[in-house]
Amino acid sequence: MQTPMQPTQFTLAVTLPDDETLHSFYGADSSPAVAFIHQYLQPETANTGKPQPPVFVFGASGSGKSHLLYAACVQAQELGLTSQLLALDEFAQYSPRMLDNLEQLDLVCLDNIGAVAGDSHWQVALFDLYNRLAEHGKKLIIVADDQPTALGFTLPDLVSRLQACTVFQLRLLSDDDKQKLLQQKARVRGLDLPDEVARYLLNRQQRDIRALVDTLDVLDKASMVHQRRLTIPFVKDVLAATFPATEL
Picture 1: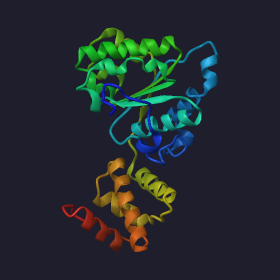
Picture 2: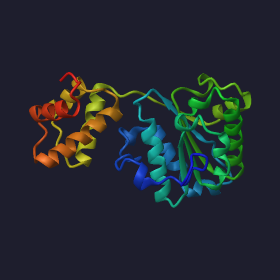
Picture 3: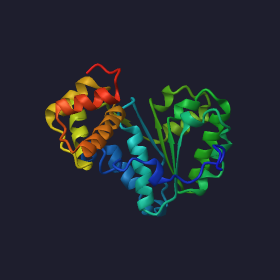
């Protein structure tokens, strides 16, 4: 049995949402972060003699940070690269030795790096990992809730390294954007999500994108089981049965 001390290569089929790719990121065609990450992961960038600095993406919860991180791993696999994603809020209680030897991989993705900001041992380990990856010409993508100087890290050299990354800030989506994103994800599932039903979900459910997508998955399964279209009465019945404490 594997322990948290020895993370293995990211298993896409088990861990990743099927529809979270760089292409499916909302506004991908106009997103500087998506375009840069796509280019950053191309193998030829490792042979230019000019290694690129790591990528640092920050933004509020629901801005799409995790989607980009998952998508980077999907893209890496498609390019034949080895990768590892670590959500540091899940591993903060473990030894930072779990970062040992990650420079053997082509891509390392660190989610919620601010979760270990208060631990000096983790700070040193992150600084060392950054340097090892750079020395081996490997790639690093970091995600956080805020910019590097606002996360509470106290190791100056680590803060300096994080500031040297190529930094992107993701903005929260408007309600109109959330509706379009929800309808986009519905189409991927083969569902027709009418405007009035999408607005009903936005007005009645949590507005966090992850929660909305989870709700969409529930509706997708119910629609298949009952062979029903997504109408407000049907959606209301499904949600009442699934989330009985929710005011609909």
